[in-house]
Length: 330
Image 1 (cartoon, rainbow, N blue to C red):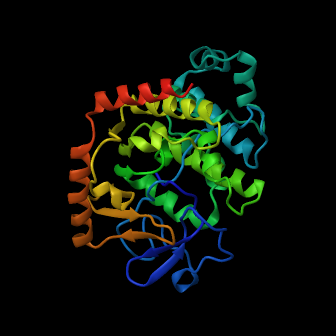
Image 2: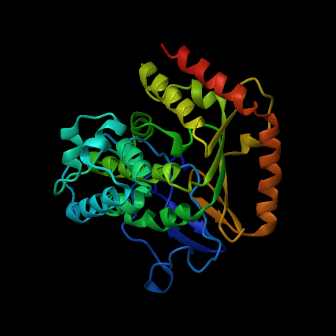
């Protein structure tokens, strides 16, 4: 749930810097890694806490149903095997997903994959996770310097995040995410890759066992246009946010715009809970982002989280407000 792409250094622990995340600047030319080797899965430079990135944009990427991808044949075999085990055919799959049978047939043809939102539906029907059916798509489109974050995020069982200025990344649309990258010194292909990485990360919301995601956002983030004359874009984003808020694993709460100064004014952060009960945090900033594992610091953020949630509207009232804001973007 991070509001920017992996573009600037991330400080991990004490004095250890790793290029992974951020919102401004260009991707680093190299990624310094302790000992010249990447950290093991589920750890960051030896820190056992396995931090989740904070507020990364996650959006729907408009991939064509017939997009060719490297490793497509292997992914087709995974889908075909899963369909066979679930007793599904292309025709039955098409009926449940709501597409033409010819479209479903293309999904099991060599080198073809469904669009991201269709992948989530298909995975649910055949009883698999998106990552199991299309692993190469998700991994390949992530920037190399950001992959450790993604592995960490996938392990989290709960993510609690506050966002002051942006719609939380895991709950963004493609158009909104692209708008947040406008003005950066990035090429069109770099923007495409960053947006694609965000889309892949949103798949965690549709796993068989998704993490519990609690997102608290300031109302001003919903009322600020992402682009000039971007009313349609913001309406789509707010409608998408409302739809995400109705997912069983997602809870969205809004801090009303009229709220006096409160702890959230200090900036966004994420608290992640790992399977072993460990809690770590990601705190973003203009120059660098930090992974925080010190328990004293985590305790401070926990207290701030409690105070921020105390200022937010309840879940149902927040959903009503989101829909109200969506309707206002006409």
